[in-house]
Image (cartoon, rainbow, N blue to C red; front, side, top):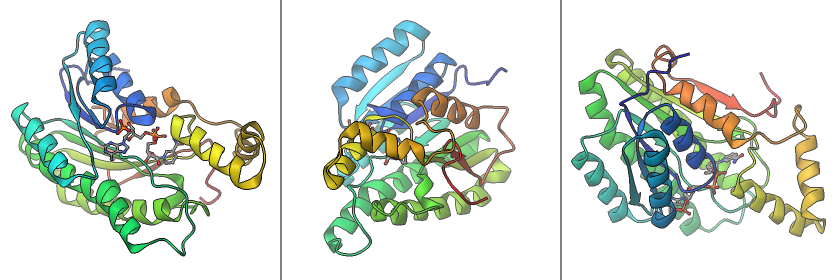
Amino acid sequence: MELGLKGKRALVMGASRGLGRGIAAALAAEGCGLILAARNAERLAQDAARHTHEHGVPATAVGLDLADAASVQGLIDTVATLGGVDILIANAGGPPPSGALGVAPEAWRKHFDSMVLGLIRMIDATVPAMREKRWGRVLTIASSGVVQPIPTLAMSNTLRASLVAFSKTLAGEVAADGVTANVVLPGRIGTERVAELDQAAATRTGTSVEEARAKSAATIPMKRYGTVEEFAAVCAFLVSAPAAYVTGSVIRIDGGLIQSI
Ligand SMILES: NC(=O)c1ccc[n+]([C@@H]2O[C@H](COP(=O)([O-])OP(=O)(O)OC[C@H]3O[C@@H](n4cnc5c(N)ncnc54)[C@H](OP(=O)(O)O)[C@@H]3O)[C@@H](O)[C@H]2O)c1
């Protein structure tokens, strides 16, 4: 299938590792130009050079700290200088594990700023130009926890739910202008973050990390974690030309993990 991504430009946030990095690689392979953003600008610069070398796509690396409002403004300005983007992958780092109770108000505020407000600011800054061009894609990465809350990740469950509501509202506002807004829900995809969560679970329960991972995988109907490539392939389709009629949707990429329909 031709995805129609050649010559488009995507801003991929959280692109230095894990899901964002995998999506950037999938888009580059389809001929899509890239702006890569995260704190680890050195790694992004290496990736950008590799994508240009391997796929002939223009790629720019931009240092971004979503916890710093001025840094978010810097990315907004850079994207505007580069002429805007056709595709935005709205992705941020996850919060530390916690229950629902006992989280300090400052922690809620801090993670709201970086996980929610930073993404909303980027969406708000980039969508007007997409509407003018009458083509655009906004894909937000959330979590299975917004449908089936994960007991150890209360902040993630809570804050990401607001991104689902935001995306659905946005989708209705911009649908007639050829811009789609969707959310993907990773279940457990084998990234560094998931490895860190397995390590935390092992420490908490006094088991080995292998045991913690096996216990976690056993709860997934497919009995394994997804790969970054499997996740990124679905995302590349969702931001493609053939996916033009998919909007306001929440798509699970979870190997069947979420129990409800
Ligand atoms: N993997 C899964 O199965 C899964 C499941 C459910 C939800 N999620 C969520 O999906 C998102 C991506 O997952 P992942 O597994 O790829 O996580 P990850 O490996 O931790 O990657 C997170 C990315 O976000 C960037 N980032 C973190 N803090 C940032 C900040 N303050 N400013 C700018 N960029 C920042 C990181 O780069 P720098 O450190 O270079 O900034 C990195 O590129 C996370 O929020 C995660 O919680 C993942």
